[in-house]
Amino acid sequence: MPKTLDGIALAAAVGDLRRIVKITKVMPVVFFEHGCGLTYSTRRSSYAGAKNRPNVVQFVFPNEWSAGPQRAAHPHIPVDVIGSTPKLDRWCDIERNDIPANVTPTVAVSFHWDCEIVPETRSALGHYRKALAPLKAALAGEARIVGHSHPRIVSRASAAFREAGIEFWADFDRVLAEADLYAVDNSSTLYEFASTDRPVVALNCPLYRRHVDHGLRFWEHIPGLECDAPDQLPDVIREALLDPPGAQERRRNAIREVYPLHDGRSAERAAELVLAALEEHGEGIKIGGRRRPRREWHFGGGPEPVVFLSWGEALRFAVEHPDRPMRMLTNDRY
Figure 1 (cartoon, rainbow, N blue to C red):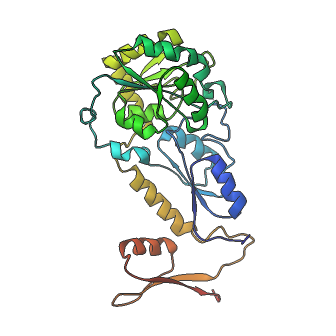
Figure 2: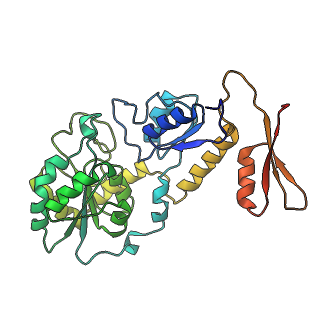
Figure 3: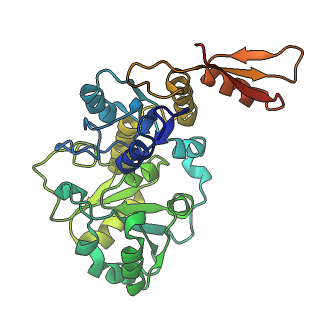
């Protein structure tokens, strides 16, 4: 394995970060929060605030809620907030009235995978599984029920919904595009759907401790109504479909906390951070005090050749001038 490796890697999960470090040893990494920034008071390694982040040279978070703990854990590594999630950028210019409403409302019910870090990260599927068929029957003629889940439990969840006679949608993009209401236990998708200003329901179960406050979903910024028991679900969904003023206020307050710059430009801000990290760290992490050969990027095809000493600057030029051929030269005397 080489001592250094040109470029940087992007990671949005701790498991991916570990694989990058194992394979490349020293490649710099820009680490993205892959969700809305849910954190838990235990500060486990999978969530913001953990200290085990080898090779990371830049952290990117959607909000200060998650950025703050990471900044405290890594005071010498840049931690920046882009204000939203790039996957939601295309929804920012879409008004709620522009999303076609179904004649019969479509209600998507979803469950997270059974993560055992703390009780609040556990799945509520077991708590609600026997209530799925009665839910469909209770809302027959009032709403269409569809199922969804975290990708890790698609097989188990889809089987549970099929047993209840409920269609299963594996793709959350379809839920965003076609559902009128979204009910889920604990997931960033709760906030992603709510960011489109449509109603959501938070599905609680006995595992979730009311006396433990992790913030956001538990319990400070829930973006809609809550359901505590399976037999309450039909009535809670009926109320949520009416979207009462109190639920609207909770939703909009929560979204302002989670996505403070929800303007459709979070991907642009993220790209700027990646390019800056690439410019500063794109020649790898130097180890052992050894100096590397100097690299130059030469562009031809124009009135005069253009030379860059920074890969980040060269990349920007290559994007802006795709017709100019590029070659890299190495000066071993550097």
